[in-house]
Length: 167
Image 1: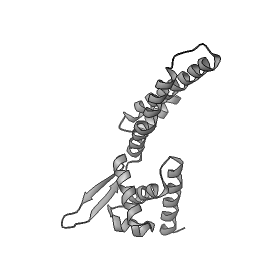
Image 2 (image 1 turned 90 degrees about the horizontal axis):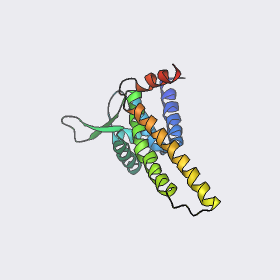
Image 3 (image 1 turned 135 degrees about the horizontal axis):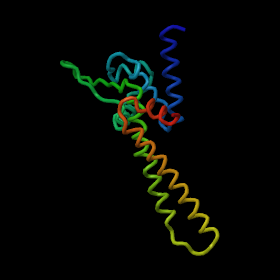
Image 4 (image 1 turned 180 degrees about the vertical axis):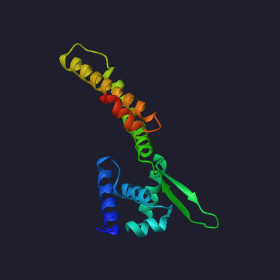
């Protein structure tokens, strides 16, 4: 396999993985292209490389910037915007975990707290509902707390945390 084939395979695989993590394929492919590129890329370079439309590229770059994964760079004497992504895989994982907590776990905890605190009415169904939703809320809060502890360790947070778990 040569470089071009390997690059294409990496971008396509990362794009497919992205859909499993709740982001669209083009968004994951843009991030993966920026991740393996030695230099920041313009929107036109991204569009040409991935064969996607300007609108799709623009929308996904905005989302990646909102996630804190991609940033803009300006080059002196150039009017174009260039884009780059975090190159440290552990920092990238930390940013993604933090954002997923904010976007997914914390809103879920809020809803679970709200629905598990309904007034009991003495029926088995209501009692079971309260019991199970409180248990789910506690589990979600524990998962979010663990994730936040991992996220707040900057250097080698993932490796250090895994070693602590197994020691």
